[in-house]
Each structure stands twice: as C-alpha cells, then as structure tokens.
Image 1 (cartoon, rainbow, N blue to C red):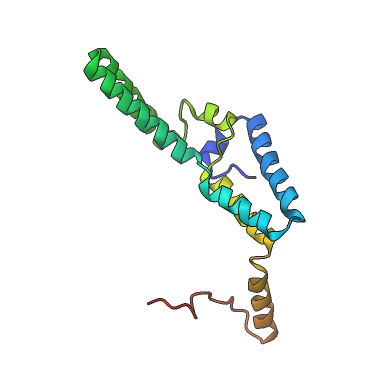
Image 2 (image 1 turned 30 degrees about the vertical axis):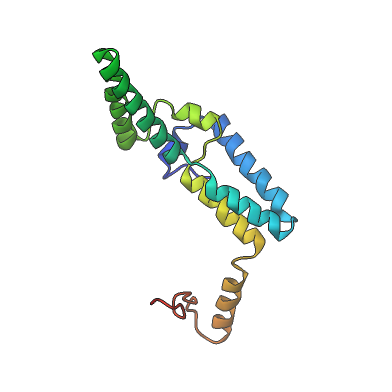
Amino acid sequence: MSSHHDPIRQHTAQDVLRRLDADTESHLRALADAPPEQSARRLGELAHEWDTDRVLETEAATMGLVGLALGLALDRRLLAVPALVAAAMLTHALTGRYPLMPLFRRLGVRTASEVARERHAVKALRGDFDQMGQASADAERAGTAEMPNPLRHADLH
C-alpha cells in the first residue's frame, strides 16, 4: 500500500507497516473462498474499528481534561498537561506527527484509508461491484462508453 499521500503511513516504521499490511492481506485471503456471511461479519467489524484519528482524538481529549482537572484540583503546574496536548495536536495537524502515534500503530491501529481499502476489497471479493462491470460492458457493446450513473434512477426525494 502506498504511503505517498498519507502522512501517518509516511511516519510509521517499515516493520509496522509490513505487519499491518500483512494482517489486512491475511484477512482478505481468509475471505477469498469464505461464505458471504463471513464477509458481512468482517464488514461489520470494519465499521466498528477505531482508526488513528478516533484514537488520537479520544486520547488527546482525555489527557487534556484529566490534566485540566488535576491542575485545578491538585497543583496548577499540572495545567501544563493540556498545553502539551494542544501543542502535540497542533504538531500533528501541521506535520502529520504525533508523539503517541508510533505506539498506536504498533498496537495495530490503522488509518481511516487503510480500513477503507480493506472494506473496499472485502466488497469486491464478495462481488458487490460485479454489476457495475457488467453495466459498463453492456454500455460499450451498445456503443456508449458512458459509465452507469447509480443516482440516475435513485429516488432522491
């Protein structure tokens, strides 16, 4: 999987990337000849998987609130914790780096695009896109190269 436009993948150690990608490939290989209900189960798991953004946002908000509460209740110097969390979030927004991201990645937390790629591959294995290819082939045989528009016949009201 390419890391070209994904700063989190760019800043992830190669051994961790290989393990994450191998895990994804292993899931897909297991589904290649599996009954459709296993694909549906995996899609459900993927729908509930926490990605790096959700983990980062949860961790940062939790640490910020805990630091604020401790700073107000125990020692004002602990108010530095929310300031550090804010600085880390700003660094992540500007550079794609976050101090705890290497730990999250080693724990197996994937980016939203990594999860989406697996979801797309599971749907392809299941045959969800077979009709799209058939409609395109029918259009080519009919002399039109236009791809079918799934919204054309949808009830948009």
